[in-house]
Length: 408
Image (tube, rainbow, N blue to C red; front, side, top):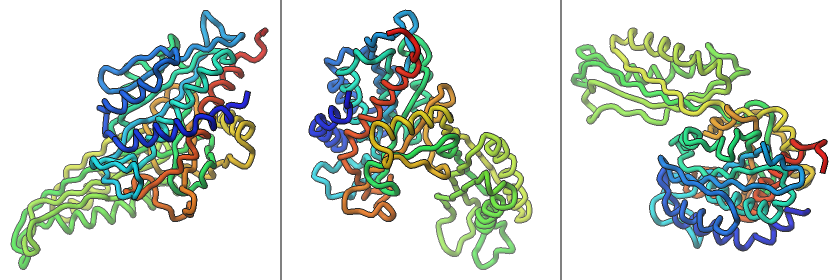
């Protein structure tokens, strides 16, 4: 059973679907055209398909017919692909580039296509599948917490019992060579949190700052104080990253405004650190505000938790890739990546693994190719058949492992 050969036989069809998805990206939880395309591609595969009530998700259950499937209580593996795009105006020269103001700048069009390819492979080999497979096509990964919505609607139990293992792949337009897979046990992606601060002062003439309470200088000091806090209040081996991406104040250069505000993304890699961050940020920024004679409204919101790969499942996935794809095509990451993912919600409930897949375009250097989320990001379509293979191999082999020792 060479699934990779079968997947390569789908390559042209997979590239067609990927181009269609890329040409018409949709953002957020409402992806009607994307959902329509996925449903059309799954039609005829004998899957039990349901769609979401609160979002345009697609859940498809494939019932294996392998000789060791426990008909009374079959084991279940979940495979996830996210489907949404970003509000980024595409700046590539692709013939199928988006023109609607959104862009699949994070490669979710490849994820969706690859999981469709895996569905076809699994359908073709269902007589070797000793359990059930849940295909989770998810909207709203890019900041909308679509995984939480799907979990709330029952995706983890959609086969009739809680999934026993779960896997997801994510492509990268840089960093990794095309076709190279990567993972690690334990934390693989950071938690993501949002910080918003509004500094309230008293405005005045720019020539007489002593007659005002300047919120701008206070906000500037706060931005610097956060960086000092990171290096002095947190363990460097359990790191925190704070990046201020929004800073707003004033309407004229010679007017001290009444207020200033800034927003930051806060990343960390342990639940213990998340618990301390809110307290430390409020303490630090409150002290700066008092020293300037201003006040500050500080809001710290947890977004996505740390994405943690189960050690056994990460090791299993690495072994499957090395055996099915080749020893040289798997790399163990030495450290986590500071990006965040709502697949963390799934891994909080079900043991599993999140894996990276290099999709750097031929001719580009992974070290300096445009990164995910760039309007210039491009992804190698040759990775589609490899991703479909990995998805399918993980499901088939994990179910086989679950039933090892059972009589055939």
